[in-house]
Length: 248
Length: 266
Image (cartoon, rainbow over all chains, first blue to last red; front, side, top):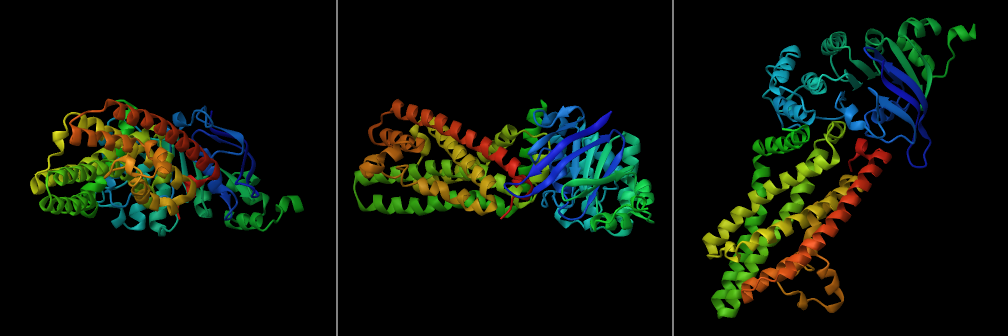
């Protein structure tokens, strides 16, 4: 079954150009799919529409069988989201933030869930510290705990390892792999880090000017473009180069 | 507890936790009502010491006006500033992608506003009694209805302010402090509505607060409770609240169309 189905998804802000232009894609349960593209390609707009923050100009989204146009709260109950660009309240401690979001998501046996996340994400020393006093890596762990507080079946992540040191970033990636394997959740990942994409994603959607210009597994894309890694594939697509196989 | 109640509690808990570890915010809650009470209280004391009984009564009206108007002011700011707290902490994105319904958010903000109002106004009422021997509770049980009407007025004005913020971003936040102050002259807080020029009297009478203060003066001066004034206040509050809810729902949807919930800021 598909966790997310987007069909003909289009967004135009005011009278501007199309920010997202007729996207069709599916995110299968248990899969991690990468949403890649340069700045302004439409990744954030797409994520916002999937989360119900933004109303599409046209097209349809269903998440876990719920139509986001008229039943989004049922879907949001089973989703969650993390982005370094959306903060948690800085004056609240990590534990207080987790309690707030635990209540907003109506998490049963909340204190037990917080204790489990504390152990899994090694948050013990951070629980009673205000989020504003944490380092970037610690904030990322706190944000990840918030994103997992309701054991989401669909997890949307916007650059989850941006500004993290390699060690912390590797730890986050490992944890996401663990969570997907353990829970069977579907993960949609917007990222500019191609190593991360190669490691985590079973499929990739390449966006450019609001359209999906290519898609496939990282391995298949690398072969198709005749490149050694996703970094080079990304540059080919961003600069409008055709796949090597098509040129041949 | 139902999930809806838990979501509202979650929002409430967020603000309680914030105030618990922020003494400047706690002081700000009490500061303005107490300051207003001191300024107008000493003014009233000065007036009543220089004249006979008619001005003693005027001093009482002044103090009752100050205290009751603070109820509306603090209720309005309670909702608007609590919404702004989410905006200032760049947390709105997380709140709006949670299952919290807009109605639950408004419900949570209203409860926060009630707590903020009580935290600010009750010390001012106590101070009025201790410093000036003015007991607001002598107005009788009807005081609850005056409070209720002024609180509801504060809420619908705040919903209008939040709608403006959703439409124009944080640039509109100044309205959170300014709007109700701007309505003070029209609300006939310190003088009868007949003092106002005839041309703007209809505007004043369209505000629930005007009827509350007319009702308050009738009790203090004549010892008479005019139920029709309370009826007008309640009826107007229902109409204005319905209009404010429609405006908020429209602006919330428009913000989702424009993408303002993603980028709301300056």
